[in-house]
Image (cartoon, helix red, strand yellow):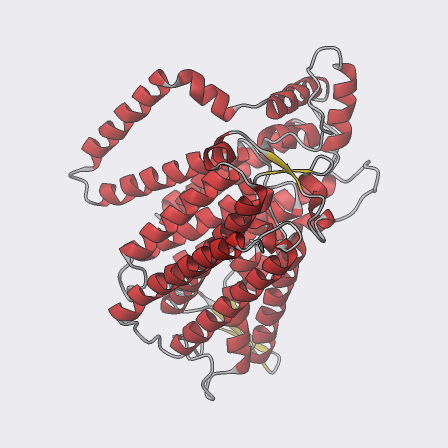
Length: 507
């Protein structure tokens, strides 16, 4: 083992079963307690702020408790464990969780992790082989940099692409054993269970004082007036006036509420859990009950946030995972594939109209129409980096007599391919295709379940959002891509370079 990391202690079956049972029991207790408070008239818009802060405290207490338990399993608190090693693991454990919170928290967590990795390198003077697949991330960052030429802010290196550079480089500063990465992955998986339980409790509080109907909540895109909620004004980015969509009242306790990006992070947590369930060696960490609990909570959260792409992605991940592992058994693969194909075809035929209305909406139809017409007139080059709004607004003015008004300003196209072409013309499409094809080839070549499911999820997501446009998407994409690659590489030797007194030696 190349790094001075202690051996991983095995977890007993009783402990593995105890965690989800305790979390769900505590969640049920608070669920009932909130209802009792409601009957006493204490669940109101005015008391929401106190409940929100209480939930933040409960989440932090739960995460700290679980971190102390996981840290003990990783021997982080033993005297012989190097402090820089403990800092590195701590920052890596918390980094994926930070992507569920506000953009600033994700940025700070990224900076802390990179700083801890750099400190580890400085103290240990060992550099590990760089994975060449990351060169395609640099290529994409290069496109963004070139795209700033001629924009209103002028030529510069885009801040949003910084994670594309610093995170891959940070992983060359250390090399963690496979068992350690498995334990970190398990911590992330369980922390997301805690996040979902807290989110359900926050929704339950809001559901009661907003006096809504459950079926209407998950099916009718309800909006609510929240003029009496304290400190709610800083969450108005997606709101229309004082009206807020139902999804605001599910995860806003974490000061982030975009349904698509939240479910994207939770899907990556599910992928980690399914991977750990199958990879029983060298150490079994996840139980079927944990997976079941995770899927049920995730499905409930998707319904509460009315995330259409979330529902599709959940079904795709579960079906693709089943096929992936059935294929390893070979004998049942063809039967399973044919069965799923028949079910999918029958569903498309029977529910054609419902599927069309489920996938498309007026906002996205308008965005796609504006984007395609803008691209026709700007085939070779578009608006440049981060100026989709300017191009779409100009196109909307030209087509104001053709398109129906939707009552919202245009910000981006809600489609990664179209968004790239609006900014960079045909070159944006080519770089994106090369970028994705390279990642797909690498995932297939390495037979990495994590990367294959990651790419399947992100490509579906790119059809209705642009993860490679805003800071949140870049952070989520890079954090999980680099972590999944690190887990996949952990069972293979990595060439290292030792820097000692001006000399460089290779191992």
